[in-house]
Length: 97
Image (cartoon, rainbow, N blue to C red; front, side, top):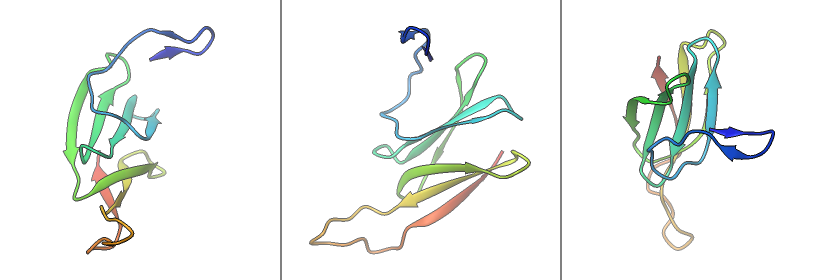
């Protein structure tokens, strides 16, 4: 956690290299994608402790919440290169909160 007024690091969270972050005010939780690790972290926004880690079938990327804040949608890309495109299509994963 960073204080945006002076960019002071106030709290660190022990998670893999992160890509996207989303806050859910209904549940007071943070959701973080870890593309290289193939995981999504669900973090308590008060204690900054990881509550749950969800494995994905590829590289988790962007995040979106349902209107009621009870479901998290994660875009999941498939690894591949220009010379060797992915064998499976990208997908969207739904995590029931």
